[in-house]
Length: 556
Image 1 (cartoon, one colour):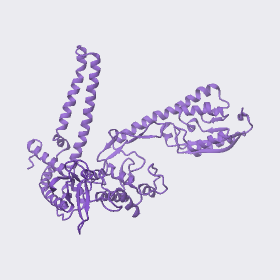
Image 2 (cartoon, rainbow, N blue to C red):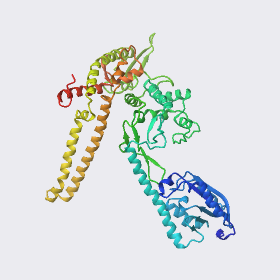
Image 3 (cartoon, rainbow, N blue to C red):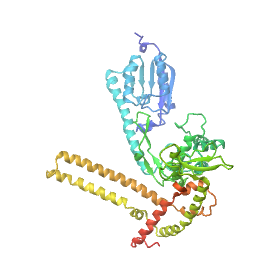
Image 4 (cartoon, rainbow, N blue to C red):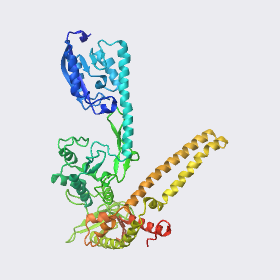
């Protein structure tokens, strides 16, 4: 059996100090200054100096580490020294500095330290394991540890609740603003555009629209000395930490570019609550379903036009990679489809003649699947699409008059919603289920249905009501999107007019105007334009205006 070192003449003392930002959250009586590392050190040294039987061997400091678990570097080092016999006494300011987890704290105090003959002293709690009674060891100290643990649990729930409210109010509560933005100096819960990074975000979207792959964009940024998001924050003096890179100096890469291209923060939509901790004791974070995110549209100034953002999302889903790094994708990549099987068209080059001929065929046919060639020459396609674009742009002129009239009448969002009959049907359906549910109790009372049928039917109607509410929420978002795309898009026709005199096809122009090109047999094509949805809405509003003289004057 080992010698009881508690009875030796001199104790080899470890001074353990800890502080973290969590302490302010988890303890209502916590004061930063009195619990600072320096003040803990002064108090413990003063105690050791007054005890001649104590020799300070080492101090162990965990600065910035939470007390809700024991995964702390200095604590682990101290335990190594305990096991090797370098330490036989541990002194802390109070039990909360040692740890806030009830179970693990109790395990160390009641099992681990006694088994290793380690004397444990918590000054402010007046606890010394060498002199403590059995009541203190088995009742008082476990109770205090339980109180510390409960502070963490209760405060964690309150913090989550407060954060949820702030998110719903559109307050930005993350530690770091996303690339392209910075925290408002007047209000840390608001974000404003970072002018130094704004043009980089715009450049990334512009290059994607022009047909560059995300890898090519990243390489272009690195070659031109553009700092990556992490390095940009460091250059601004921000102590930024991320799990996306472990390199000393980070560079742009494909994932970094794609994170920017898919982030709706750049169209003014604030999305928060995407991830959460499993519980207050574990650092593990899990992703939440999008339905559980908190999203606030038009929350801040946008960097990217919503139309361009939607086009980029569509392009990201298509295979638009250039053959060689730095080159652009094909002019029609991601836009050209077979009408019959909806497969993308494959680009082919016939080099048998003096001048190579570029043409497209159905990719499904090219792989030997059940479809026909749908062959069309690139040059013929260019000429036809260019002519169709000119005609389409010219035809949009009449909608400028309609749109101007509607804006003069200040068509409200609520009035705009009336033109969408989907919500009317959903609301009637919800009301029907609510009526049926409310009648169940009377049916049970009169013996029309059994108790088992009552509970089954109540659950069924409740689920239908919840489903109706979710559908209404989705419909509201869709109507809001359509309103923004039509009446809310002030630059709609100025954007179109900029393309009025086009003479050649360019990738950037094509993806902005065209949603999809379908190739039929006999070299026939169909084109779906990006603004078709907007013109359909304006037609509907125009007709609605004619039928609603009490709400709006006639438009045409």
